[in-house]
Picture (cartoon, rainbow, N blue to C red):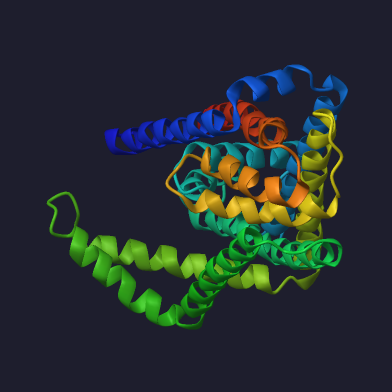
Length: 337
């Protein structure tokens, strides 16, 4: 790793822990710690169990998508590869945007496939996750609206999330619609820019970039021509979101509060919008977003909400970081032997 990425990760980590420190001060660090100490250990373990099932569901989703690209992975290997991908997303700035290149390289090393194929695989998983998440947001918010008034904070969060996701979908659609123009013009522009550096030969760089882009779009087209696999992948994505919502519900039970299961269904995908910040895996920003959304929607004290969120994030953030870090290292070493 060169100095610039390392510096970015360090600065992002410092900023994340700074946000967490401010959050602790605002809600009352002592009360949060007391709530965590008194938490039901069996229910905490259950939250981690649901998170493990979520990780398995989305690893099977990755395996399904890669299957449509003629890349075969066993279930255990797919689990370890996806855990490694989550690890990469959680330690690099901008979440998926920062971790996807690392995850693609890991998939390529383990499976022996092209880098572009691995990138299409992990990117397809991220894109397919959007469909169930938006559906759960509208379903959950709609149900919540039948039982209580929708606050301004929640309305703004929904609007921001929908606008951001809509923008991403439009950009993806335009890139696909004009893919031939992208392949024809983008490599020349990038090669001309980088060719000003003595280390790059513009002609050979342009050829390599054009070939990689053609392979990338061809692999995307192959994924789109497998409707059965796509339906299975979307179903596994939905299962993963529901399992995460269940983990958050159980985390609240662990700190002594029962909440409506409908609330986590829309809060979990909404809070993850904060992962688009230049923080490692959205750390700090996502926790703050959860607290900001859950306090008004649940009516639970902020310190207790923070404790529940920390249990939940321990299960869906820190556990995959530990498991994924070990698996990424092991798979990387094994693949390069």
